[in-house]
Length: 437
Image (cartoon, rainbow, N blue to C red):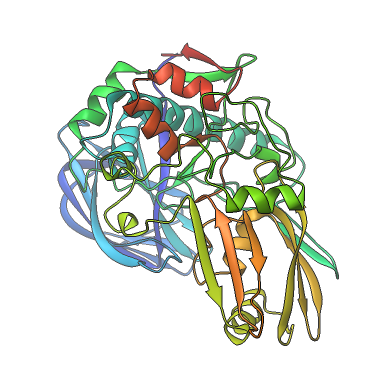
């Protein structure tokens, strides 16, 4: 098997300015281009270099893959996060433009290992433990290849992919990457944050990628859909409780400690409450800044309470937030009742009770979106109320969906001397490491 090439959706606009650093050939007319260019969507067609094209895709290929690069101007990053902004970004590989919903989508096509160098460098610090970096290289490679295959299977299927069910009583929705039809993954946090060669690749990351080149996680011969989150909170969650209802035996709930067997059934409300109030001896229960800095960005380091956290709303604040986020008129919110929890304690279904309306929402990310301006740390929380107060106090555990590798737990394992193979097989039970290219 040869190293695959990956299609990454970078930006989407009616007009896109870009700069070609080196000679690029346009496949449509065979001409060479360099320097600053502008491409526009115009009445269902593509306007470039004074000409109007009606192809599905315009492709600019570099004369020299290793030495040429291109810049895209005003790329939006952090979409729908509080730190959303625009920046200019640089990339290697080829540049594709296609018409999509009355705009243009810019797509970067490049070798998989070059993609990994960017995404892992943006996730990890140069001081990160080498075994942690190797583990992350393997899961990022596995996840990406699994998404490519999944996308191909969805396109080949005669059935529409469903990620939402809704009726008069509930909305159950999950968020994955299946809404990308014309490329494999996007460049934002919705998939994996990718910034091309805008920032210099971490030399330690390059070493880890080279050491694990072509190595992926497999289960029964199939590439694992390897997931990861910041902090599981002590117990990881199952795939089917976060995304589509399809179990993966290598993505099961484990305790994030030396003994990975589950000790408590956190689907039980009383057990979940006791767990959230506890401080268990698990890998990700750690406050060592030297370790945390390996997987947390500078602004994330300002958040010391990711393992156990608390958020407080007045009744008026919560009511305004929920009514606005759901688009429904609940009136004043009276209560939040967990209907179903996963094995990590994360709420899969939450009943919102208001003066005018009661309604159930799920899955975990939908719950986190509704209960926060951006994203609540996790859906693994309990509600507490104080006497003589109408405030809603959410006390919770973990940061993120909790499926697969726990980044903080894995960083602690690396610091304790575990190999990347041991780290991977701790989080992905029954999986195997296999070299595909």
